[in-house]
Image 1 (cartoon, rainbow over the protein chains, first blue to last red):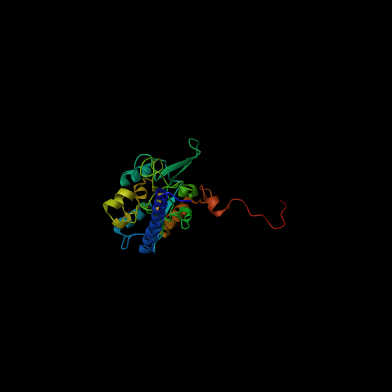
Image 2 (image 1 turned 90 degrees about the vertical axis):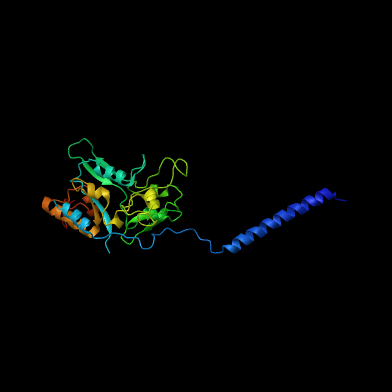
Length: 64
Length: 206
């Protein structure tokens, strides 16, 4: 049975789209193989608690 | 290394909500979000007790354990903080927290829930100290300024203590000794058992 030329071209088109999609996904995955979710952490060099004169005064006021 | 903790002295709290106001003012907290609140038991009954409650910066924080995107982290001083850029606003931390500390704004990027907001022990967030981004997302970073949380510093009766756990534990111990009582204080039994009940004597009939 002879297949109409229009059906053949549609099949080829769909095959081409599918193959193209797979190739694009492979390229994207290959470019970023170490993709990891961002981890929460403090910025380096951040100042934390310091026993300043202000803090010492606060501790004194709590002893009243 | 100092470990940061809050301690609420129920014998001193007068339910003035000064701590709540100080927190809101210091960090410009939006309407509907309460990083800190005062809880009163037996309200209106003589002998009622109040304590100020916020994130207690747990040593083994359940919010950190349940977060599906791992947005929490702990500073070297034991302050539990989170990254709002990672938070997805799922609310698991709210279900896990025994203090109801995580708060969810009613508007924002995630519709009705929004990204979680909570007490930071006035230690800011993962952004650079004193940056505009840090203030906008987490509020003022008082710890980096050499200060302590605004709520504790503003407390008129010094019922709410905040700072180095070793120091505030000593302050509280001195108060208990001066009062001549400890085990009657609300929460003592839960934490340390019921010492008022005499121990059962061996061979005694129950």
